[in-house]
Image (cartoon, rainbow, N blue to C red; front, side, top):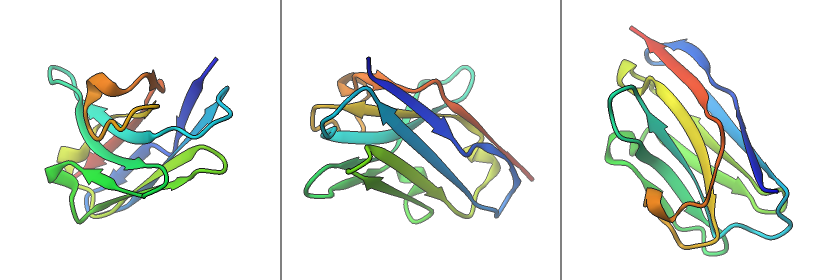
Length: 123
């Protein structure tokens, strides 16, 4: 069965950096889409970044453009998120997701989800 496991979350001060990683198992192929989403209590889950296999198309949420960078290692079905210039507004639970569709940042099109890793940014 497909399983996604995130790592790299933690607590840092505003202006700092974190790198999140996600490893997929139980799937021998290459996911069309892999991405990151985040959620805070009382709000809907929002798309942070996503990347397609092959062509390497990327998608970013407006609030993270220029600060976050997504990357993939297709050979190992891993996806990472480099987060720079972090701000308190970035505090959230971050979820890794994968899909065999060209999903972009559309939550509804993702089939597999990790359990999340917490990111806390203090001012």
